[in-house]
Image 1: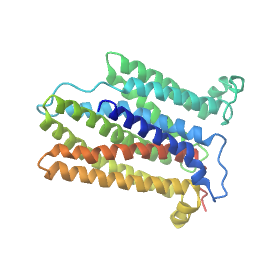
Image 2: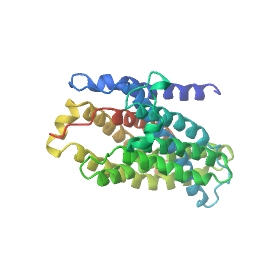
Image 3: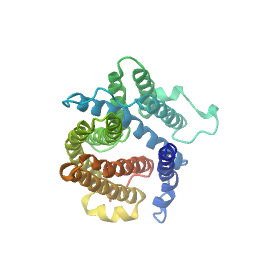
Image 4: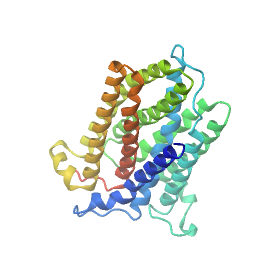
Length: 319
C-alpha cells in the first residue's frame, strides 16, 4: 500500500507530461498550420510553469480557510511549495533561454543572448518569472511563508501580460481577463489539492468533522471561482475567435481543437465537483465526497497540461 500511492502519482504525472509532448501533432493534423520548432518541449515547460504557482497559492488559500474553521486542528500537511518553486524556476529558465535565442530552441549555450532579454518585453517578463520563482522558494523556506503570495502573483501577472502583446487589439482588456482566469484556476486547482491533503491528515488524527467543514468551505468558494473561470474563458475565446467563426475554428484549427478539449475537461470537472457537493450534503458520511474530489483534482491536472499546450500552438485566425 505504501508503494501504490507514489506509483500512481508518478503514472499520472507521466500521463500529464505526454499531453504537451504528443498533443501538438494531434492538434495540428490536417489543419495546414505550422507550429514553432520545439513546440512540444515549450508546451511542457509552460505546463510546469502554470502548475508551479498553483501549489503555494492553493496552500495559502486553504490554510486561511482552515484558520477560520471552529474546532479545526492546528496541524497542516508538509508544504510542497519549495518543490513547486524549484520546478517553476527550471521551467522559467528554460523558457527564458528560448526567448533569448529569438523564440528558437537553443542547441548550445553560445546561442543564448542573456543580455538581449533586457531589451525586449518578452525577455523582461521571462526574467521576472525566473526571479519570482527564486524569491518564492526563499519565502517558502523562510519563517514567513505567507510572503510567497507576492512572487506567485507576479508570475500570474507576467503570464497574463505575455499572452497579450501590445500589438494586440485592446491588450489591457485581454490581460485583465487572462489575469482573473489564471488566478482563479490556480486557487481552484491548488486549493483542492491542498484541501484533500489536509483532510487526509485530519482524518488520521480523528478530526473528520472538521475536514468535512473545510471541504464545504472550499466548495462554496470553488463555485465562485468556476463562474469566474467560465466567464473570463468565454470572453477571451470570443476576443480571439469571433462568434460567427467559433464553431468552424473549434474543429479546423489546432488552437480551436485544443480549446474544445479543454472545455470538455472543465465540464467533466464541474460534474465531479457537483457530485462531491451532493455527497458532502446528503451522504451519511460527508467525507465520501473525497472520492469524486480526488477525480476532480486529477482532471484539473490534465486541464493544466492542456492549457500549457494551448499557449504553444498558433493563435487562431480572425476570419
